[in-house]
Length: 167
Length: 254
Image 1 (cartoon, each protein chain N blue to C red):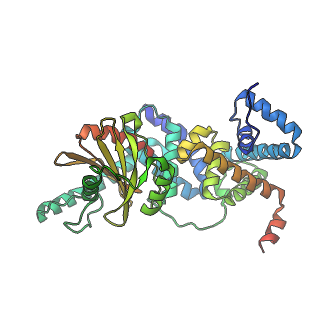
Image 2: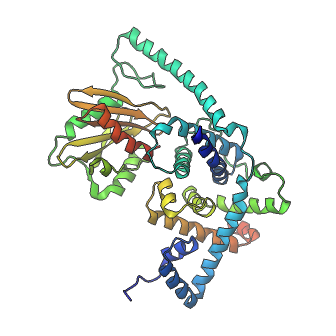
């Protein structure tokens, strides 16, 4: 079917978003699986003219926040399984960077992490991101703001110091 | 030149994301020249944005895993639906044997016979509040955002209030109700001719259903379930008209 290709074109983006959101590849794959299943079962109910990519992201977000995933694996914090996450042939340097970035992101609350990922990584406009998150644009912007403030702090504070501050 | 808004926090955010009209952008750039601290901050934000993008974007540069071929997902869905149908058939048989007029949706056959369903609750509330002239709602549409947050909190599942203006329905407001199992919410909408439609919402139990239409006197009710929320749309209209409205509500609450 024609729609199959359209969906498949979005799946790797959904998966990337889910990985950065959950920092766990199994979790992310389950989330994507549930998203695609739900999208297929509601395909005919889709509002005509609603663009596919934001619609799929909105479904994924809904499943993620509702915690109603079918296959719920309790992952508290196993840390980041970067080797598993990474595409494989990338250099060790890239892995380090990915690990650092994911760790920085994990310092953000879920809603802020989602906002910054949708805008900065997935390239959604403010209008699309606020539709996906079901919030007004103003709220989205203040989430982006808070997320960036926190990320700036993390960049400015070397890890060792951060550790000491926690103690 | 007309009076322009001073540069604020939102401008700096929008600047980083390139969400800004050209003239405003020029203004912000000029302003940044005079505010080195803010300029440093914006530069840092841009660096962070680029780092996030450059580091995370390649996560999608892998071949599509087999399990995510839509064909395969569809096949696994078919297997599940078959299972669901079998379950539903069992429920139907149960009702037939019991001779009870119980109303069940797929997946939740545990309700004791005779216990009120969400459709009963929704229609009871419809009958009480729709004719009400003075206080049809508890929280009026002026406080729409508050209403959504508050009802979502009380129901125990976040909701967003559907905009039905495309269907000629203006939000009147909403109220909290007793549901079948805990708090429920009723949103009320009104058409130009004064006729009203209500949307009843209560926390879902993880199961999903198709649309189910029923009728009591003049009032039609269209019910469906998502894992997060159970919905009942009620109004003095037929199945087709309710379906049209439901299709507007549905994509919001995926």
